[in-house]
Length: 193
Image 1 (tube, rainbow, N blue to C red):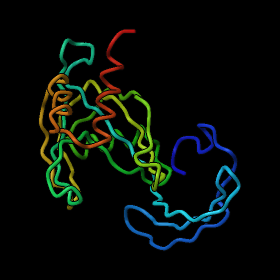
Image 2: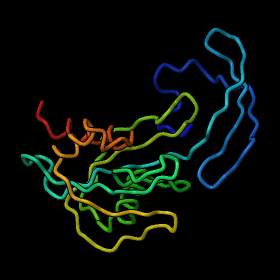
Image 3: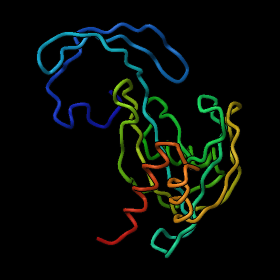
Image 4: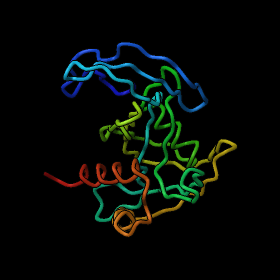
């Protein structure tokens, strides 16, 4: 499991009895796990194994400002068959610290370097079939530079106010799950109380 603590959240021991890898790829692996369910019965589940990821909400203005500006990327996503507004994010390299990954992805996708990177929390993307866990961060004190997109990344960087980005969730212009969650976490963090 790629989350920070596989036993966290009321686990009931080691339910995996057996596992067989049926596919191994560049982004993920697919296993068929034989598991013991909480009632003691056995069954098989298809599980997509993922190394985990980091995502970062990059603020151009201090988050405590009235309506701070932030960066979103507009990226082509084949699975969605369209361009999506997202926050910078990417897979953890083997043994990579999640904060270091957030800094790397911010630099690669936006060209920005952050003076400060603070954790916002984390979440499983779709725990019904994958163990992917995303670590969310807030980045401030940005310095602009050159981006370094991978050959399959088609990205533009755009500036929005936080209020506008949150409105884009309500209007369906932002539909990426990690972006929605991280924007809400960032908005909550900046509010007193």
